Image 1 (tube, rainbow, N blue to C red):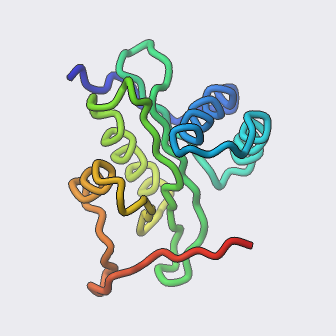
Image 2: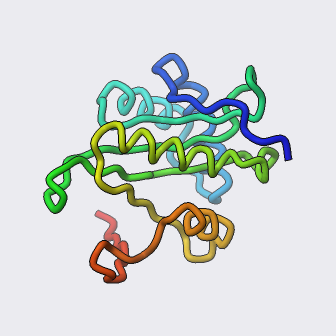
Length: 157
């Protein structure tokens, strides 16, 4: 296990690399959409918005990003402070087991704290046992501050 050599907040010039990693994530999930062009356009839009950040991680000091984390920020009423949503986390299969995912989550928490966030939330598939284990090891829980179990629900529109 070689470990993590570099973690950084991606800049707008890295939009193609970000979109490329998100395309790999899309493919890994077995999806065919959105297309590569739509992914790049979305990344560029989100980077310009200011309410989104992408963090990249590489196993070598001069290596390209082999793992990505997408963070979304918004103001939360219940904490009267910003909230952070860890929307996506992906590590290339060839880079797994090197600590990149954990390094991204720690960097995400640090970025959220620096922006004044009082909580960071995420979702994952119940069958994604490695991700669930990682999130739990790093302090994530399905329980809120009052000890109530929370369930994320969706409705497609």
